[in-house]
Length: 143
Image (cartoon, rainbow, N blue to C red; front, top):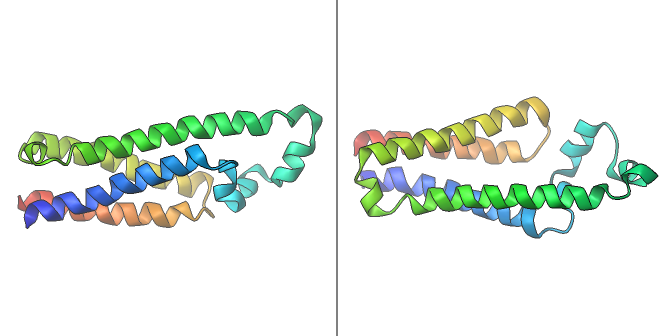
C-alpha cells in the first residue's frame, strides 16, 4: 500500500507531462493553448504581433520552439513513468533522486509561472502536481 502512495501520484505527474508535451508538439498553434496569459505577457494580441511584416515568419519559429519544448516535456514524463517500475522503487536512493528531480521540476515551473504568467490556467495544473508530489513524499517516508 505504501508503494502505491509513492507511485500513483508520480504516475499522474508523468502522464500529465507526456500529455502536455504531446499537445505542444501536435497542436498547430501551440502558443494559443495559453493565449490569454501569453498575450498578457506580450502586452499585445497575437494578431497584432504577427501583422507586422518583420514578424511574418514568427509563427513558424514559435511552432518549432514549442515542438522542441513539447518533446522535452514528454521525455521528462517518460523518465518519471519509467523509473516507477518495481525494481527501481525498491531502491531508496532511486526513489529519493526521482522525488528530488520531479520536485525541482514541478516547484520551479510553478514559481516561474507565478512570476511570468500569473494568469495562466497551467498554474492550476502546477498546483495539482505539487499536491501529487507531496503525497509521494509522504508515501516514500512510509516505505
